[in-house]
Image 1: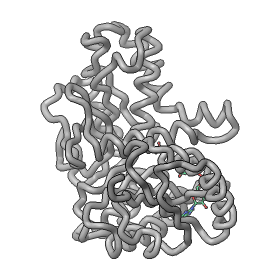
Image 2: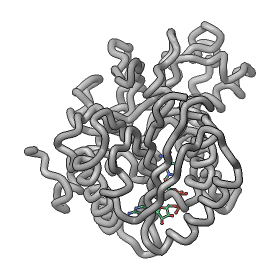
Image 3: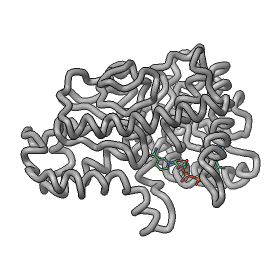
Image 4: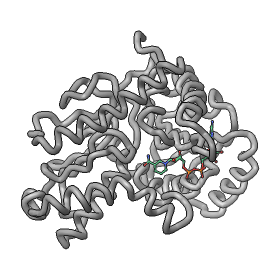
Length: 332
Ligand code: NAI
């Protein structure tokens, strides 16, 4: 067996954690022959519940699970981690204003960014699932000046996977027959799932669908509002699918995207596609050797341009709000 990989998961006693930890421990990220050490961060009141989850992990007897460490101290849990999956976040509760939500999460992601900066391994990659994911990633990144910005990403893979599922249904193919799906922008209702560059069994997806009304009034809103539809149906937010997407995103980031395909990842904008630099914006990316690269040169039609700009504008406003709250300093 190879050297163990140290993986931190925050919010480990939550809903997503309850699916994510078991998938990671069973080898879904690096294969069953690569040992993993789980390092699980929770707030103090949730540690008892987390102990119960660890008992269940023990009871699964996963051969790839080398060790599990739990705690409420970020410096201890993040020590030497190669991968940090930041899932835990403060949910919006009744009567909470947007500014309160940003402040509460700002405090969490400021502290976690600083702790990662102090103690994570030199090769650390940080994936943010906890909402508002793009802006939380921006806050963590801004508080970790010694970690390259390219090591931070926010999760839009669930949106990407939802888009694949909807397009596969519409075109009656298997998900595996679809390539080059893109979700642009924010993990929010303004996101833009784009099939104009996607391929269905090698043919342009928009041409195969040939139905702009479906794209605008069915596909995009279904993908963008899928989270709310799941809450309505299940009485709880997406958890297994969010955990699965968190794994897909980390695996493809570290192990590479397949030839001839790409994935959607929210990463620090370099100004590509006219998006303000520094926003954590979801782009089509290819990955290799643990590094991502934005797919450049895609043609953006007028319809897409408006969508790309609208979701960028929302992220721009979120960034302005956290700057105003003093959570990040743009001059850094
Ligand atoms: P949950 O409420 O079941 O679990 C969150 C856990 O985070 C709780 O156990 C809580 O104690 C913990 N936590 C809170 N503050 C913490 C801190 N400072 N350090 C460590 N742990 C902390 O929520 P669930 O369903 O597991 O979702 C987690 C997050 O993921 C939410 O913010 C949710 O909105 C987001 N999400 C994101 C998706 C995406 O596609 N980006 C999809 C689905 C959910």
